[in-house]
Length: 493
Image (cartoon, rainbow, N blue to C red; front, side, top):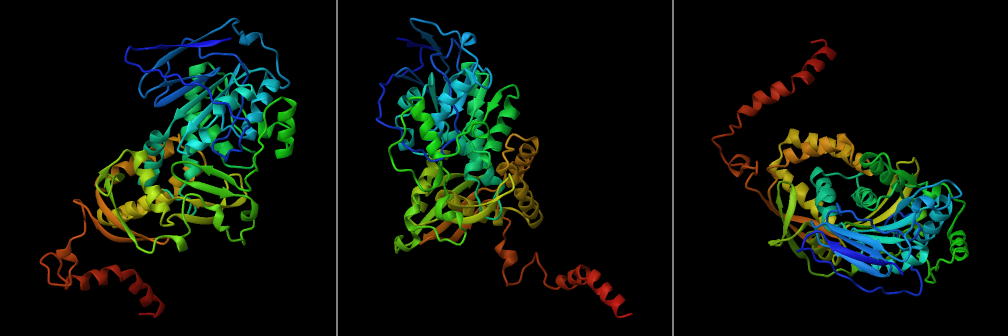
């Protein structure tokens, strides 16, 4: 039986081995990531890891974890070496190794044998931890192995996700179609980028996802693949196979001896990460229907929230949050803290009909408690630190910024250039904002900044040496001159 020997690239690297916990059946996964599948019995190869963050490699019951910033080497040895090039051609062609975005749900578990059958390839399952919760990560190794994958790679992306994707959108004020705070849109490029890194690490020639042909996520994943490694092949089973629904998938799984879920299927299609939780499907498909009370998971019903308001102070430096009630927290920890605070007060529920990138409208309900608090604080602080013209230009660009992110163009030079602009004009957006949370609502109770453009001595109704009220007469005559000239023309004056 093959064994995985892990060799540290430096004496200080810590490698931890864990046993495998086998689960009796697969559980239905919410749309945590779009998935794909790989074949069996191929190791990592003797390569140094270039993945950043905390990366976990699973292989044949063993788990190897490398801490952030440390490279590892892994060598697969066993009774029989696998020659990938000698594996048979699949029904649709030949690929050597595919990295699949894997959640452990029915769809992604079925994709694994489908890829092997149709492309004669090995399948490396890749799972990104973007804050969907520990429950969603349980038993993935056993499920991937049972599906026929040769390897499972799990990477903790929470800090990178918040720091490098969420916070730039927050700084830009990016909101899609007046309401949507881009929770899923921001998560896809960080996952896809990590998949490209993983593909390089394991020597894969293709990547795969389980996104349907009707949604936005297929675009978001594939544009990132194109931008970061245009040589990778991309396999999207939902655009190729004959499986039409859940029953077809279960039948295919049984045919290929893949354990199928025995739990009741959720009536909603959900996507969860550290920023939000989205709900689609079932009664929500009729925009006239009110969401059920028991649908929500991150936030309490505002009617059931505490009868006493809670105050929270957000500290911001150069447009990015760093403090909650005086506590200096990492990006992911800060957001998790605010999710907890906002969730118990019913903050951040959004019900909207949006225009998908592919042309159709869809109805979704979003829970974004921490994100709603942060957006409110950031915009309020800008009211002190940005002048009128800068704020207007920033708000106009924020619309395009949000559109680019929604459309999966995170690595587009246009978004990157706009991000540089946002970083520059928020250099002085430093200070703190105090908010009152009460039964689903947020009220701003205070804001302060060392770079505030607000001057009490100028704004006061009392006399001022800087502002002479008599000057207003000349200003009004000049400002209103075009209107006055037009009126004179119309009246023949």
